[in-house]
Image 1 (tube, rainbow, N blue to C red):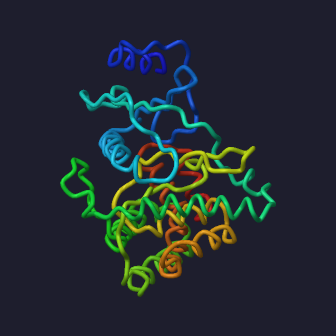
Image 2 (cartoon, rainbow, N blue to C red; image 1 turned 90 degrees about the vertical axis):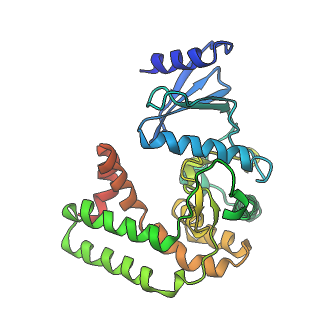
Length: 292
């Protein structure tokens, strides 16, 4: 399979000399291949990921001069034949490693933690400054995702597809959580903006020597949505103390924080849904495990 992907890159970009390559095993929705130790190529594994990658490519081109740190900037792309294995984008490798929780917990310096929080909030504030109106007229096909509609649709899917695998007690507690959120006041004052959509440890790269963020990757979940969703990724990845550092620096952070905890509570169920919808047994089991 990997050789076929390399052959597809060569077909589309015959001038690119490929001396070596290896597969990055972290991609859940994409096959990720590192070429010449300097280029990253992403091939969607699923049909639905193809339009997502096209949208992501346009978003990256738009925001590259707005956000405050390195992001993937597409150099190579192929969208002529819209089939998995034929569609891809390629960009220069951003140096750094994912800021996994284990590494994060080893950071003891208050000054370094403050610096990381400042970098991340600056990035999010710049991204969230882009409104639906700013993107109007571009070929992005971005639909505004109001959290009430989005969470209602998610709740419906969970009821139909996951409830059969969940214990009765968890069915009740999940129902109460969703219904309280959807009827509550937290959704009464949401300013929609461009969000990253998967702002967690695996997509935040850092330099462990300088203890600085070196780049943000994987904008496949980006779109017009609730900025609180990105902070839920930070909370899930790095815990409450660091989340509080970040939200305190963010404009109108207290209002945003009201919605963050609910979004975080949906992440495991979303992973289980991804697994059941895409035949990914590992993702399904990981997501449903605590709801049996």
